[in-house]
Amino acid sequence: MAEPGDGSGTTPRRPIGLSGLRKAAVLLVAVGEELAKQILRTLPETDVQRLSEELADLRDVSPELSSQIIEEFWELLETQNFMVHGGFDYASRLLVETFGQERAEDLLMLVRRSQEAAQGNLAKLQRTDPQQLGKLLDTEHPQTIALVLAHLDPKRASMVLDNLSEEHKVISIQRLAEMRQFSPEMAQKVAQILHRRLENVGDTKRKSYSGFKAVADLLNRLNPEQAKKILESIEESQPELALSIRNLMFTFEDLVTVPPATIREVVAGVDKRQLALALRGANDELRAQIFKSMSSRAVDMLKEDMEVLGPVRSREVAQAQQEILNVARQLEAEGKVVLKLETGDEMLA
Image (cartoon, rainbow, N blue to C red; front, side, top):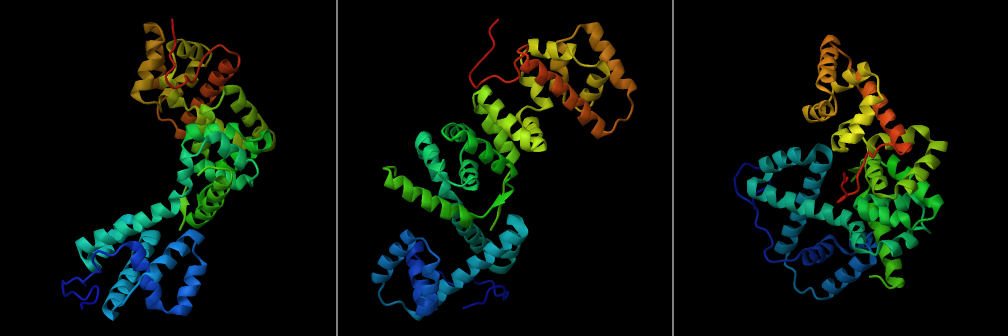
């Protein structure tokens, strides 16, 4: 049997037709009783039960088969290590050099499936009734609630949030916004506990996470008055956090999506030099949208102001855009404009 990376160009034979469960059972037999016990202690009860049934059905495991499965397990560990420390492209390159193209693709596919399965248990809650899930989560720690919300799409997460107590709504949003990463192991433990509790009431490595954006998407789908109350509560204790969330709920580029009447109101209420400065950093579509809301003479004057500005710092452009957004939000608070339409909604003349 050729060793990996020995340059022989041959690939070790692999166990054919064995399920992942059968391979796991063979591996437990191959590593010995003591190590097998330690491994089983780290597994969920459902996995232990499935493996126990498979072990009971196991007959006559040859040394050759045991060797092949141990080698495959080692390769998968190496693949996962490569992916964690260097990313998918790095892992792919090393694995192709070590095992060849075909085996490298098989290993990467197996590891990615394993990672997805480890992170996917909480995703199953997507199919749980939001009202029931919200009531169940209302007894949990805010960090647990935030972890679950992170695995739901914004629409369902907002429905779950709607069924939490006012206190939990605010603190869970804070935890979600501050979340930067979570471990699949922790997500799996939380999922197991929640699934067990749901059944009782009759319902059956690190990953990066953008908390602010998820919160913004979630709050955008809530009743505006409710979203406002949550943000105001956060603002009392963490004003910077609240501002970061507000900034992602509606950005300067989002002005391209608002009704023409809103654009006219906003343009009329801002300093024209600030507008010229802000538009220096805007895309062509937004510029055209704003120009359409102005008279031709006003557009000519604005374009002239933009030209005479000369080189400007990106920080100054961002500040000008923020000031215009502040004007827009103030107009919205006064009921004079609409910044964000509900999905499927439209303005009628």
